[in-house]
Amino acid sequence: MSSPPPSRAVLATSVAPAVVLRPLEPSRDVSTAPPAAPPPTLPSSRTAARRRAGRTLGSIAISITSLLLWLGLWQLASSQRWQLFFRFDNVPAPTDVLGAARELFEAPKFVEHISSSVRRIFTGFTIAATLAVALGVLVGRVRIAALSVLPPLEVLRPIPAVAWIPLAILLFASAEQSMVFITFIGAFFPIFLNTIHGVEGLDRRLVHASRTLGAGPFDVFWEVVLPGALPAIVTGLSIGMGTSWFSLVTAEMISGQYGVGYYTWEAYTLQNYPHIVLGMISIGVLGMGSSFAIKWVGRRCMPWFRTEGGAA
Amino acid sequence: MSTLEASLASPALLLQLAPVREQAQAAPPAIEMRGVEIHFGEGKTAVRAVSQLDLTIAPGELVSVLGPSGCGKSTLIGAVAGFTPVSAGSLRVEGHAVREPGPDRGVVFQHHTLFPWKRVLENVEFGLKMRGATRSERRAAALSILETVGLGEFVRHYPWQLSGGMQQRVSLARVLVNRPRVMLMDEPFCALDAQTRLSMQELLLSLWHEYEITVLFVTHDVDEAIFLSDRILVLSERPGRVRAELRVSLPRPRTRALLTTPEFMRLKEQALALLFDSPAARAAG
Image (cartoon, rainbow over all chains, first blue to last red; front, side, top):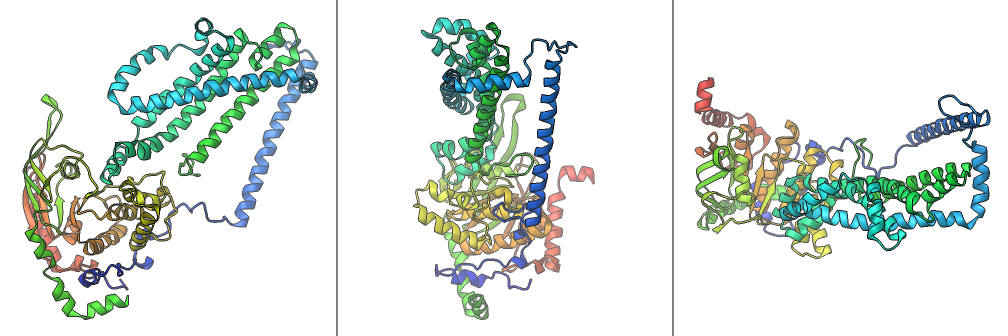
């Protein structure tokens, strides 16, 4: 109220392009008050940072203690050969596994197993992601694509990747190709369905807004549909990564040479029990690592995306 | 500040300015509807949203459409914007039949229609980018208009980091940076608190002056309609048609002080009477 209202006279001066309406004073206007959430660029206060660091340290300590307790229990069960409900008499103790691991890291064979699996995942998953996202966007946007592509895929979808193994062996010349195919099958459907979901769930008003701002069909697709569906696509990639590992390990156990799944099964048939656990741990670590990689890439691609918790 | 005071002090400038909007009347109407029908669905589930609608809006006019909820107000905006096809009748914007959405008719929606993945600056630049403006051109234009709406310090923020009022300021800037001939506003301030709403209304009036733009403003808020408009069109219940027209001859520029004057109250009384003079209201009353 302290400042004069914009007057008709402003219009007269606006003929000269140099004169623009002066910006409104903040005092006059409540809508420019700082937003509730502080922008992430602001440095947080030192005490808050210290408190956060303390909390992080505390939670790490709890996690490590819990992990050690479980390991201790396992060690006890195996060394005492407990036979409660689970029979621990043949289960290797953590110390045995550690010994096996030490000798393994010196053998070049183990690296070969790991790299084979990673290569299969990378190839199968990349093909699946590319195809599933492209097809998912098409099905989500184009009616004819949805009508022609969805029915056959709906029949194939409930078939677990494991059930594809016999046919995959017949379909492909080499075991290697069939295992990549199984990985592909495992990853495809979660990514495909999440992409469709993301495209169809897009707020129509965003498309409308872009069109009133002059966007053509290609711009709508590139500037609105794709970024709008990205959170769902990343979720699909994350789930797909998990299912592709699951499928690959099974395939390797059945038809593989090399690979962590093959390694784990081979350890069982050779009665090399500590190596079973070692194989399992490798699978866990690899799966976790690739899941982290997806999440990291997702965050890098979507700095604007806010999870439910509110943190950017 | 000094420019503003100087021009306020000069009555000659005010006199020179008066004919501007009258002259424009000679041009084809900014928006013209003749016997417009808008139907949704088919067969038994068909809905007549708008029926036998006639309206004419002159270039540079600020006209509000007031009506009960579900009377087809938003459908009207959709039709002029080009999202909603007209079932019958003619709809022309500046003499041209409306076929599809275009940047000559900017739309400000209710809320949450900024692109969440673009920063404030990129949101405002969007229209110019679509038109093929160079990076430096569109950056300069967007920064200038963001300064005008009072958001010069928030250009790097993402929409979720802004309050509702600030988001609507960005929406206004995103439309106006394209210099549209017509701005369509679909209850743009109804999700804001009363105080913010009032400052947004004042901002809209000053932008309307600066950009000499035609505004079609849909609202269910009687005060808002009177405060902003040259004319108010009162729509009937579904199927919507213009039932009455109220000319608001309150002097401009308008300030919030106007809201408590006897003239304003008189207009409000008239508007409310028009709004509630419907079969349903009579039955309820």
